[in-house]
Length: 220
Image 1 (cartoon, one colour):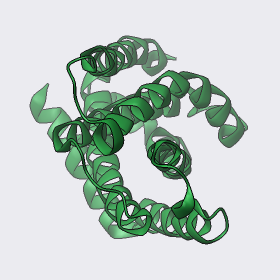
Image 2: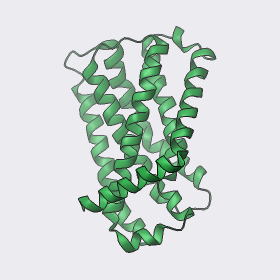
Image 3: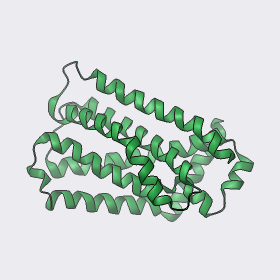
């Protein structure tokens, strides 16, 4: 299983480095969104609390711009059947999921780095900032990978992807806003462990659901 998943991961990385589609799209979107937020909404003048949640809106829409193609490109390039012949469903899903996680983790780091500089935000709790970035990438990648697989053979992929993703991601965004507020504004006092537990639980539940559901999607 691990060997096949690593092979899928390498394929995804090689393909992205060749086309640079998702990299260019997400960097352009994120950069434009950061400038829009700073100069149009004057977010640098907001209180620290809304600042800690605004960054996740930027990351959400940036992720939805690029992550839809995770499985959609397999149907567009007619390689879905080839994957079915050469790999197991779980191997394909885990390989795609791990690639999306790494990609979104880099996007999170890039976005937070420039966002915090532009907004002049201090880091009160570095550990909770790391938790937010890591588990935020895990949660976003699990939902977008699962949803991309579900809509891969649909007619209006873009609209269906958004309709399915946003309701699933609302709980994650609420939790991430709270943990980011702890990292950048409130600091830790011992009462924040429930938020961290909810974040880990959400990631575990969505990853497990994706693995289980993909077996049925794979055979259709």
